[in-house]
Length: 111
Image (tube, rainbow, N blue to C red; front, side, top):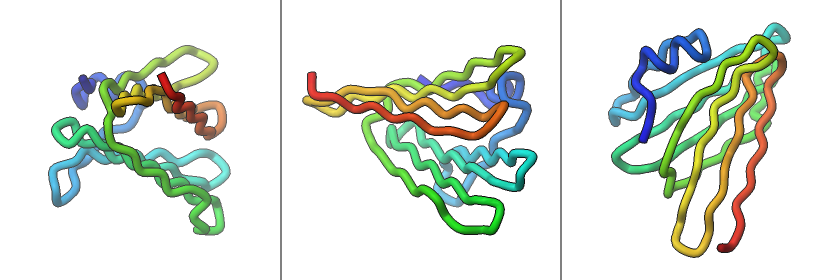
């Protein structure tokens, strides 16, 4: 389950685009010049997160299949994207904080 483009825009303030394979792509930049790009494909249940620092150096390139849900939260103090995964014996969540500063937390555990 993934939110539609309007829900993403309302929660994070950016519109997703499409890549050549039809996946949705959301790019967010912070005040310091860092960027985080989230690509997600609902049919393939895959997610890719690329984080580039203010000097253009890739800090993280994360790819995972088995996504079961993508959701957004928006509060006055912070905006988040949450991605739930279930891959047979493992389940977990990736939490992307977009504001007030970029961060990514990932947990994938055996069930």
